Image 1: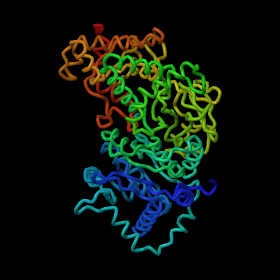
Image 2: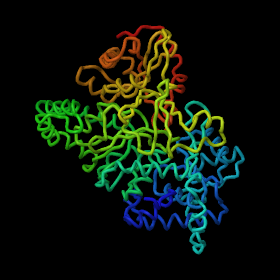
Image 3: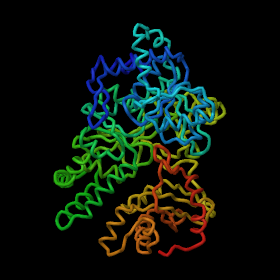
Image 4: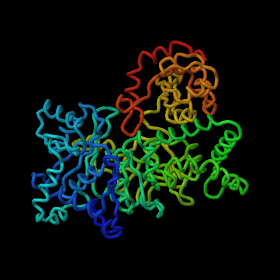
Length: 589
């Protein structure tokens, strides 16, 4: 463990300890193509030599803009082991963000996945007159391809990389990650080798030894999946990349992973789909399904269930929940959830089904994990984001904000000393999240900047309400509003698949989403669902009115960040007229 001080040390460590035959794998032309750790290292070394021959020097910035694929990892390691800085860029970035990042980071070379991304970047390059080289991963006629750099490296095989590697210290800059810019201009988060390695070492202690294969689909451009993939290499876990979110279920069936990471929204979709199928059952099968579901919702960890409950659960797992596991490939034992708050009932029901959901918490600025639930006895507590990592300190400020300190906290914001000084005070990083810290377990209650005050002076934490409302299988997305208003209201995107199924069972005509949100019977169904879930809240924070929206919030539409968090200001701006109308008229509920 002590021999790993820089991220690229992970490759040699894996080769010596595991010599993984399928360190990386992806589907090419319908077949899974595997890369051994030896092939991984060889490719990375060739790329490093090629980059050096192109004149890339220590601290130069090289960007990668691509969905998950082995080439992402090859270029990442090839860049870092010569001391250059990798700048990950989401493929969904808007042109103005691409322009800002390329200029601010002074990127010399960028690797892009395909022609569409090449054209997107090339347009910005031309319009901004940037001195930038663009290489594609896909082979496209007449366009520079990343293999040209590999070939350059092969031609200079005698070039010794050792002096370049030896010059890199744990405190050197590894990567420059730009925030999604939900509140203004993106900021470049500077993370060092030590930031990531410290997080890898202490997060890895929570992974069961039987985990050998993982499916990856969250974007590597986000620090969560990137750190986890570094950890997989450290633990000798094979990484298989899903083709896309659309092919996730068939890819799970093919790969049969032991684990994967996800965001709550995808778990909500999986759960809602399962429950929807349960509603379609009839007779004894339907009764048995919802008996098992109700049983799982009462699940307690660490042996707190009664003997009778455990006997019933054994039957439920055999008859019902085994099918859930089969749908996820049949071998999944651990799912790590991050990026947003997870509904407690989802964690409870999946644990009851025999699939351990481990919710964690962190930020880009903390590399990212601050706290995470574990799979072993005493390591998990429902309703929390888990125990704080052993090498991280946490304290709660007077206003409830979570502060943390440790080796995984960023070096600072690139070219933004003002923002760095605002975020890190006396060594403590201010997360911007409100929470509670008790018995070593951390609980997040809301984002500091998202808590709003009604016109009556009452504070409302929207995320708590939103997570509760999404417990309904008829509510896909929801955003609670009400700053300086008389009461909270909500913009609701129904789960139209489940609404359509409900309409069929209740003789309600369903044509399409646009018509559905205007149908009084459908509106009343959504309102009744939300109102039932309102019961747990104080009168001042209960949603009093709702408006239904016909289309989901999406990344491409600009309403969601890449980790699927709501861009509240964007949504508010897009629906200004509807919101004004909402506060003028009474809902007909």
